[in-house]
Length: 512
Ligand code: SAH
Image (cartoon, rainbow, N blue to C red; front, side, top):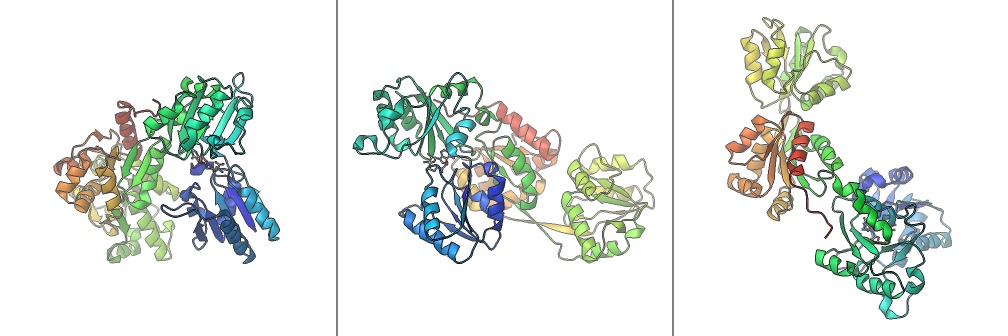
């Protein structure tokens, strides 16, 4: 079975559920340049991934070869997904592929996709039809040269055939196309928008009229791929419909230095506000060298009065190790109390259906002591499964209060510098708007990855945002200027100060 699947215009969220189901089942995926690569991670790990799009400096694969490839894959009995940008039947040559499959006697299905000709305008604030403004829309290829004389697009007929014209592949010939439309009788003052990379964080829009749009696009240096919209609907954008480009972090590139496993929460929040998150994990979470001390506490878990978790990693590592011994959370003694530092830690514990008895109002180790001090700690046994190297304030203070504190390493965070060259290049080019630090260790490891002088230099021309005062002090201690410090020491708190910081400095809009 061969599925001809539309990937949507770029935003992975615009992929259809049916397309996703096909992708998850596929043994082979044949994809194009405009199909978002992010979708491929939904495929089976061993699925064959075949790129047939343009490669720099190489001729594109001829359509016949792609057809043959699909036929060969289909004949081998594989489930094949032919993933194409936007909709497969809108300037996607999907029809030709379907005909080749029919000729070969192979079964196929089509899964339509959201076409860029509708989605890119929508994300730029332009409805392609609008009551009282436009009652018709035509999708047109701009690929042909109107000056050549012999062509399939009849510009004279087309110019006034629909209120809204949506042109694909037309940026290179915008001047000729505009001239043809004007000479066919379309008013020179007709509003035009050119939307490049619609629906993704790089989206950029240039607006003008038939008369000046070509010049404006050249001035702005706008390159393909872009959708051109011609018609009065373009003016609606100015009425505030351009929600996508108005999001508070639109167009901002923000570096996330958390460990890969934890980066998602921060990256996701930033992306939902319009930013592009660049993950540069400076930390890698690994097992401790020696599980001995943790195992020992697990065997005598009954003797503990308090379980204190200081991070999500601590919770996960502890639960995983219980599992390793064939145990689960029923092993936690009934009378023991559970404390969590920070709401994320508490939330993770609660995910395992355990109640958190104490969560300090402030998300620092010190604050926990104040909360617990109501309970007499004298003679109580306290277990803190946490990172191998961590600040000693908490155990020390609990001991001073008379508790017997056991601190077995449950995990180890190691410095990582994966992706270092890429981040350095982006910082060097001035392509990064902000670097976030979510723990002192992320600062330390960032500095270690580049060397102190180089780290300070790379961060000099971007903003630096820290999750709290301790992290900020660590940064300043290395000579790094801190531009924003979260008021609430959490990921949402950090996102809030980053958003505030950029609100005071609106991004340069695409419009000229
Ligand atoms: N089948 C696709 C179109 C393929 S033709 C669809 O339905 O969207 C390729 C052209 O599509 C590009 O030259 C450009 O004009 C347009 N295009 C595709 N993705 C785009 C995007 N994200 N933003 C703007 N234009 C896009």
